[in-house]
Image (cartoon, rainbow, N blue to C red; front, top):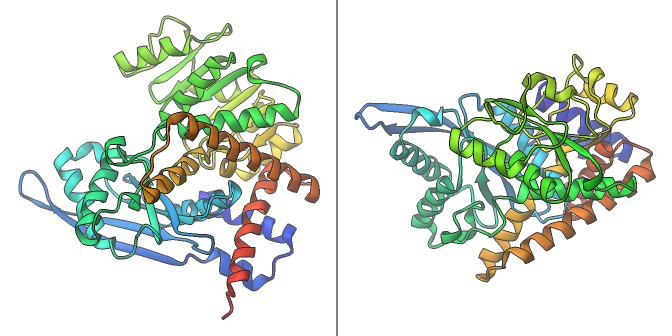
Length: 411
């Protein structure tokens, strides 16, 4: 099942639990605006090339729309739509005053030079500058984009609207980016894990962890779990996988990856088949890579007791049912990976105030938001006798529905 179908299914289930009126249910599903633009740029050799850019603005009932911009060859309207909708529920779950959006350009970033990427980003910004804004829609980095991409968007947007640091988040620190933003998603995953484990009388230092994906989110989660005394026994990424039943030395693995660009030939553990990582024996499995990795083929063999969804949509609905029957506790993506957008909100607040926070304040506030959101989800699970996923969806959908009704959506 693709991400859009799965997101719609979870939304409809939450709407039924909440007893939403069918008209408001339909209204909440339909995006506020979908934008499709042509971006033609001269390549370094002088030839012209065209790319298609998208921005889906899903909902603005609780505040400006918020979401990443991805540069990837498979960017398509369906996927962007699903991710924009997920952002609406995610921002509502952690109770930050945003709605959801998502965007992207169908391109292969590694095939473009830095100057070509800059021209593409500037043309895309020129095409959408009057449809985004500090109080309208605030982009952020995503797959294939980074702080530099945000710096170009900020510069191009400011040519039309004057100095506007709050137009994007995930910027370089020198241009008003927030301290703690780079580690925020991984740190949020760890705060979410701590909140869940506390419910079961456990803590990170007592347990074993396997982590799929060793990019920004996975590497930060691994580092912070290791610092907290947890035992990371297996890690994988696209280059390979490594395991050590006594716990991997994460700082050494990070150094090895930085020097070689790969997890292979690391002498602090044994190589393993990356596909086996998901079914490796452990207490906590954290998928931090692609969607749909847990499916009906492998869900029955998962041996973890807890799954923390750091990736977007890593568990197919069929796998969800199989794992629930086995008694595996799944912490859903719309809560578990919300640390990134929460610290993006802190960055936006700092930019609007023109007053920057130190890193300790950012991390303390993040912990407060993540812990509070978990207890709100848990309360709804008890109220509706449902899974953590449905607890999170009912929390998010209910907040958006309430805001929509209070604004007078039929007027």
